[in-house]
Length: 333
Ligand code: RAM
Image 1 (tube, rainbow, N blue to C red):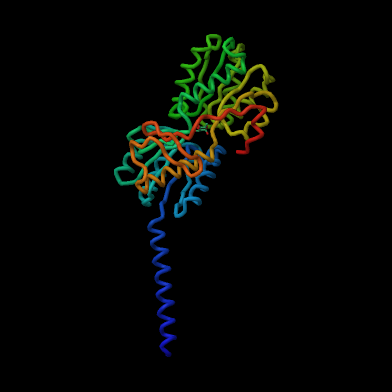
Image 2 (cartoon, helix red, strand yellow):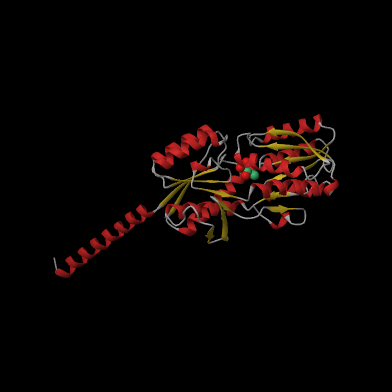
């Protein structure tokens, strides 16, 4: 076989080898992030995942494994986390439905060298490196009460109000409610008469709201503070023929709430850009895995969002957004 032919064969083998080596190195360098929502299938979380997937594409050599319990079970979430640790993922990013159940599992994951962050809903502080928080609990709690009070006439607002929350173990809703109770003190005419869980279950949220309307004839406002409960509560108010009499304010995506805003049942919808929350979560996870983000940092530079403040170990997405009849159609998520 002629020398140049042999040379060609050797070169292509060499090229082949380096290609394989490159691919193997690329694979080694790949950062694998397990992303767990409180409840898979909830549009709010699906939208967060959209942003997360985009971040993985933009950052390159990042794999996001998105999975979670479809019924929101913290126990099932704990099992998933343990499996991910065994599979050797680099980072676990969790939205917790029950810190008491998930914190011990997350601590064990950290002991095994896995980086852990929380997003949307926190765990115990010693169970994770950072919490990617959509906005401070005070901003969200105060924002909800001020929006409701404004819709009910401002400081002179009068009447009974009630809260439909998520699972009673959810740290994010519990933190928001603390600030809501605090803020309600500045509106002496508004009386908080009940707080009911709805476990991210649409039917339960609907029935709970119907019962509240029957039980409290002087009910003027319902705070529905989960993205699942808010449309359900608005539906219940409309079904009870109380649209415009009992106002519903809460947290959900603009696409979910547009019809209720245009029908007049809802005047204010609060939230944050869910895609940006997912995006920032992956950026923080990657920076942590690469050792580029350390505790004590006071800000984080996002390629999409710019400078994000870090307060303690909370990486903050930004201020909450308020959508009204005049603005809600400007948004599509
Ligand atoms: C539900 C979940 C989530 C919360 C939103 C507003 O989707 O409870 O944790 O942030 O509502």
